[in-house]
Image 1 (cartoon, chains in turn blue, green):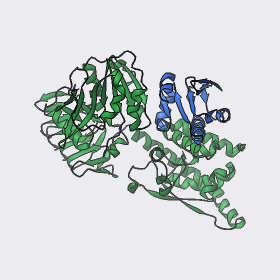
Image 2 (cartoon, rainbow over the protein chains, first blue to last red):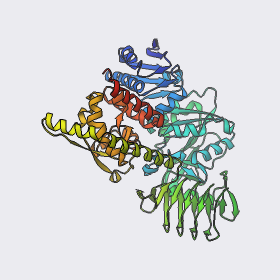
Image 3 (tube, helix red, strand yellow):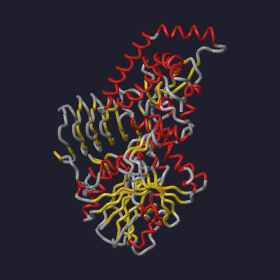
Length: 108
Length: 477
């Protein structure tokens, strides 16, 4: 579902699933709950091709977790379909969304 | 060479139009204003353009695509807010570019292919930076400070007198006048000038009884009825219908708008049923479709869907009438306290102006707070059957987002509220069918997702899931 790595003291979560929906959003929340407490977190969304309302809720809960520990969370490499949905539901006003990993790291 | 267009999508005092059009996408003589900017930038031999977007970015991205249509390379960046838009400049990798043209979506100054210039414009005798500048790439971090500058102090500063701007309604009209009067002739217009000051696009039905006083611009596929007067400085964008005996002067009619009979429209911008008076700066939404209306294709589809769901609801209400009466009698006998509960809600979709919201009441056999905790069978008896009456009346839908009253809607955060009022309320909600947790983020995700993805298929999927749960039960998560 996810893999993690650390680069320049930034915790990078890579979503390995191509779908984030009701079937796996709970698992995603559980797996990311501790990681998002890190002060700087990036989520690599490049593999994700579809997300539904449960998935959106799971990503939002990551942000809440991050905010609670006064950290920063950014998303990068979002596929076109998922990006369009994020823009339509105005999540781009809630999350920092970057096109590439380099941009995301530079934006901290 | 490379250009970055800062396009936050918001302009002061244009809130009503900005709900539907990000500023750059405001129609301007047959094209979005941003397209005129892009074409101008391309004429400066720039092939790589970055857009920094904030408000309604999907409208800009879907219109411009990857830039192939213009033989260019377009990249889109998202900024959380207008203030953050300029900060994004520090994140973009400019590689080995020497200088970059910084542009703004609301201005189009007539500049030349020149480097190291910062362009200022004057409005009401006050100088300000218009958002355009040639900046050496190694000084890109200085751009943010340009926003505060209000006088020409540096050697590279220059005041521009020939420019177009759409940062307010009055400036939009003034800029249109400049183009129609040929004071600004750098735009590529798609219409033909059939006689001096009269631009006409293809497929326009213009009866001989129409009195035209130039300058006037008429977009594609417009239809005019009899005895219409156009008294100069008028732009009618594509797909509009103007009814008998109406008079237009100093007016802009946005695409797919309907203008009713015998209206005298002067100094106005009209977008479907939205009327903006430039003299008084008033933004009004007109409720009556026969005065001003929307000619979008979806309107007919929505009417057909509404007739279908109302007929189905009425049929089901009649069929389930014995169950309805049985529920009343059972509750009267078994329940202590009230049988009926009255729930106020606002009919959706609603206008932006809260004064035009239409409040309704529906009756159910349960309290509003209990709805999400009911078993499917109880939900069916206590909410679905009594709710059928409201669907039959056309004031509610089978599937939608939860109905809310005025106060509840006003308490929602702005973006949530904006998505909420554009959607439709229903008795069956995704939140109920999927037994989603009711944290604020889950609620927002569920409602926002429904608001943007709702359609016949989505409703059918939620409706069938609900029916299955009523018939076969469900495991509550």
